[in-house]
Image (cartoon, rainbow, N blue to C red):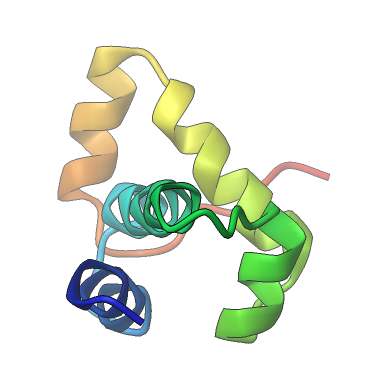
Length: 84
């Protein structure tokens, strides 16, 4: 795996990421996979990192949040949970 992909993967496993940083890491890994000609689905990424597919999809949806929410997420160290 190229260095960029490894960097994204290693960031994903870093427990000190904010939820938004985690989402950005997932997005970077998916983009790197496309650049490598081996696109991944959210489910495949989830399997690679040992997470549930819905967990990965929820994190990726955080990237679509409005700027004030993103700013709050950048400061947040706990993990937001989706509402049931």
